[in-house]
Amino acid sequence: MTKTKITKISELAELAGVSTATASRALAGSDLVNKKTRERIVEIAAEYDFRPNELARNLRLKRTLSIGVVLPLGHEVGQNFSDPFFITMLGHLADGLTGRGYDLMLSRVIPTDVTWLDRIVSAGRVDGIIIIGQSNQSEVIERVGKNYMPMVVWGSDIPGKSYCSVGSDNRKGGALAAQHLIDKGRRKLIFLGNIRAPEFAERQQGFSGACHTARIDQIRTLDVHLTADAAYSALVDYFGNEEMPDGIVAASDIIAMSAVRALTERRMNVPEDVSVVGYDDIPLAQHTTPPLTTIRQDLSQGAALLIELLFKRLAGEETGSVVIAPELIERGST
Image 1 (cartoon, rainbow, N blue to C red):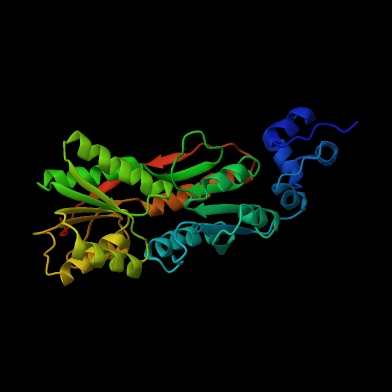
Image 2 (cartoon, rainbow, N blue to C red; image 1 turned 90 degrees about the horizontal axis):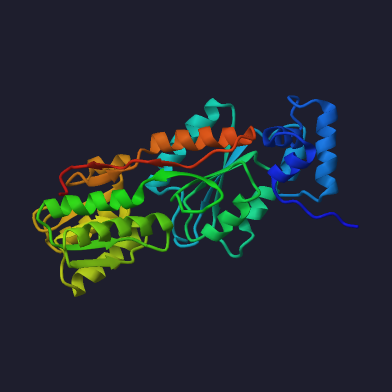
């Protein structure tokens, strides 16, 4: 009679009469677990067909000493690692990982099916994974996250999700940006960004909520891509055919900078005619003309938390998600 397949490390630990951390270490071949116990746990795993994608990795007697950093581009296929946001985040991650003696392996993924993350996990080339952004791949990440423990995601803290995430309070950030413009006397506001990504959707929700509370009725949302050229082209078309806003909240600093460029070419002055707020506070934001008002996500703190939580999970420890408070940084564009 075939025994019921188990899919969770906690179920294996219960059958073996050990803690989840001990079961995880045993499957990883850790010397912290005595040989007899390790062998018994591996035998139980095989008996109950316990084969999450992490099993092949953990059964090896040594680690790869590499961490995968994955950028899924389900909603923004034109975005690259050269994007200033990713360059900043990757710099912090690389510093933190090399400080722990680990290499960083980059993967830019344009999903063509729902198994793209399974393939990365099962390849056995990395000891753990940091995913930068959920894109429109939340369901894939959720499914894999149920069984693959050494994974942390930079993104939204989606209610009910099974995986660990780190990210800013996007709703609060969107609300801060809108309220800042409202306090400046702006009444015709627009949000720029691709809201198919959870982070951007939450920023738009915060923006809309603040406008509703302040009884600002003239608000719009424009679907704008993240790459500078695509955002600029879309905004040139929009500004040439629609009523001009007097306040802009952009889902990223890159979109905000593209908006300033498009406005300037229409001989609109920033901030006299139109105030502009970005999001992220990438290093370039303070060097634009005018310097960009933005919502700061502390990417240095975010990268440190991603690494800290990932290594706790590598050691078999369950971890919760972390939400970072955003901060309004006022500069010349408002």
